[in-house]
Structure formats: structure tokens, C-alpha cells
Length: 251
Ligand code: G
Ligand code: G
Ligand code: MN
Ligand code: NA
Image (cartoon, rainbow, N blue to C red):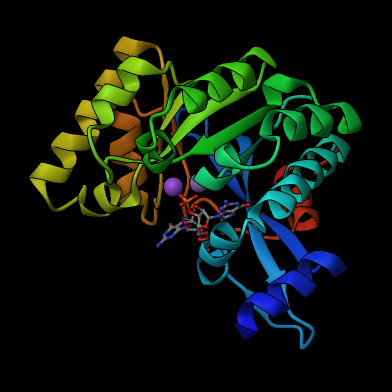
């Protein structure tokens, strides 16, 4: 297929970029970290979003070299920023757990960048755990043993989420934006978000609301004690230089 050949060439030629979207503490409004989001820069300058090529990258195994690059690039860039504490979150695909050496990639990304392990967060979706072989849980434990944090992404959209929370101790749960979107006008959405926030408090897990687009949503989240928020209201994904300029002013 044409797209596959293009993608292989992009891997060889290093045609990927990372944009970063801020994560904000609802209580003080401070940026606590960023999520690294992958883009493919085509020769004509066009920027291809992950939805248009990550599925093919997973299918072909190209996600292994791409994911290795993402880990190294995200750690190296954030380690250069003028902050000793800002975190960076990297998305992982199920295929990275099945193929290649994920633990080795994470270890080498930390070593090469000098980033403190607790500043790196790995986001996985329920689809990673759906495979539910012992190997996946073993890999998650090895990653955790390196000192990095593990977040469950898009929480509430997959299957039997609560069982996963019982089997693996996540550091963070990110509530899917479909629940956040309805919060202000749909009592069911509000009830679900409230329940997840309360679950987080009980389990000692940080709760992040995704897809926050309005001041009203942010105020509701702050009121119910949701720790962290992410969304267009707080900042769109953008190049690292812009994140530094806008969110990390030098003293
Ligand atoms: O940036 P955008 O909204 O287009 O991202 C859409 C989705 O693509 C994200 O929710 C995330 O799940 C996925 N994604 C973004 N960057 C990466 C990445 O580096 N690796 C993997 N595997 N998925 C990513
Ligand atoms: O799957 P994951 O949650 O990692 O996806 C993050 C994606 O969500 C990014 O591609 C980003 O562009 C998108 N996103 C981030 N904030 C918002 C938002 O406030 N509204 C919407 N609709 N999408 C968002
Ligand atoms: Mn994510
Ligand atoms: Na998400």
C-alpha cells in the first residue's frame, strides 16, 4: 500500500514531530506537565495527525521504532526545559507491549536524557490490558520498577475498567472527554465524573479530566475535587518552544 511505503520512508528519514499539550492542576491553575502528541510532517509541509497513521503503524510493527523515537525525543526535550519538576506523558500502543523491547526503550530514553524517572508518565488505554496476558502485567511492573508512572488513558470507554484498576495499581486515571463534554448539561455524565473523582480519592490515584473546553467545566471539576485538567481551554497541543514561552517563563 502507498501509505505504508510512505510511512516506512518517514521512519527512515525521521519525519516525525512532537507537540505538547499542558496538564493543569485545577486547584492553583499551574501547569504540572505536558502530554507529548505525535505528528508526521510530510514533505509538502502538511502535518498528519496520529489517527491517520498510528493504526497502520501498529499493524505493520512500525510503531516500535516510532515509539522508541517518541520516548527518546519527549524525554530529551523536556529535560532541556527550564524546570526541574515538569512531567511529560507519552502514549503507548498495545503493539509496543507485544513487539520490541519497551522496557529497554524507556530505560535508554531516561539514561540518555537524564530525566528523573518520576517525571515520565506512560499512558496506556484499556486495549493494552484487554490482551491481559501475564506478559503485559509483567511489563507494566517492570516499567513501574524503573520509577516511571503509569496512567490509564481514555478511562470509561473500554470494557470492565474496574477490574483493571483492581489488577494493576495505576498512578493516574484520565477520564475520557466524552464524559467531560456532557458534564454541565447531563446529570449522568456529571454523576460519572463525580464517581471517578471519588474513586481516585479513595484509591489515592490522581484524576485528570480530558477535553476541558469551557470555564464552566473547569469550575465544576475544581468544585468536585478533580486534581488535574487537560483540554483546549487550558492549551492546545503545540511545539515545545511555545510551551516553554507560554508556561515556563524564566524568573
Ligand atoms: O493529537 P491527537 O488528538 O490527534 O491524538 C489522537 C490520539 O493519538 C491520542 O489520543 C493518542 O491516543 C494517539 N497518540 C498521540 N501520540 C501518540 C504516540 O506517540 N504514540 C501512540 N501510540 N499514540 C499516540
Ligand atoms: O487519546 P488521547 O487522550 O491521548 O488524545 C489526546 C487527544 O485529544 C489529542 O489529540 C488532542 O488533540 C485531543 N484533545 C485535547 N484536548 C481536547 C479538547 O479539549 N477537545 C477535543 N475535542 N479534543 C481534545
Ligand atoms: Mn493520551
Ligand atoms: Na485520552
